[in-house]
Length: 88
Image (cartoon, rainbow, N blue to C red; front, side, top):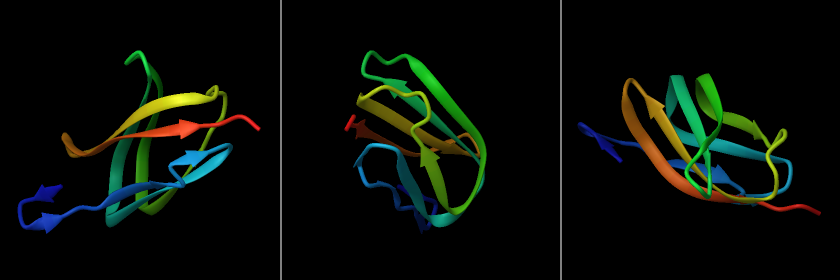
C-alpha cells in the first residue's frame, strides 16, 4: 500500500499456522489495530495498540479455519489479507 510517498509492506508469517504467527511491517506500527474476521465476515477478535515492526499473533481460542485480517493505523487500512489456522 502506498501512503503518500511511503510504501508499506505487511505480512503475516507463516500464513498457515497452528499456534503463533508474526505480523511484520516495513514501517513501525504505532497504536495500530488488527481486526480478525471469520469466513462469514463476523469480527471474532480485535487486537489494539499494536506497536513496532514485528508483532506476535497467538491463536488463542480461534478454531481451525480460514480468517481475514485487516490492519489499520491512523484511520487508514494498511493491509487486508487472509490466513488459515490448522489443527494438529
